[in-house]
Length: 246
Image (cartoon, rainbow, N blue to C red):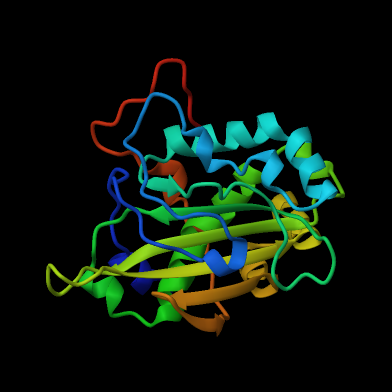
């Protein structure tokens, strides 16, 4: 199944000027149109410290302010087809948490070309493909030292949105899909250390899905290794002076 999904996986393009609505109910924050690319990453992708509702969250945001800026900049410069949503990088409390657990969170929109073959797959197959392609790489970018060793960071949330299919008519809105992946600290550490494969990460993570604005509830996903993020190069894209990408 993984090879079949890979063959019909949609291509990607440079980030566009508009981004669809996504998952206000999970992490909150305003959803706005993306700005045109500039030489430095937009700072409004990071939730301001004063907007947190707990001292724990404010302390984490202040402690790792430079690391969050570096994360934002690395994605902006090295993954130009990925749009980080406004005020989505930060230490948010998952809705399912019963105490003040704080997950380092990130919400991204994948600007990819519409693919009829991809749209014809089952949602779980599309979600599995997007999980395999983006969740692991995003987690590795998020969980960097010294934050990685901080026990007060309870886990990580990666929210991925993509275009399911183009509108049938000019008046219709495009249809997007979204997955929200919640990864507790222990599961993340096992994966990042190499003790657990991507299949175990998918099995142990809490994954919720949306078809447009309609929740489809919890998803059980397959997962496989996908190196697209590390090898894909956008044609004619030039890095800003002084920027290096892995």
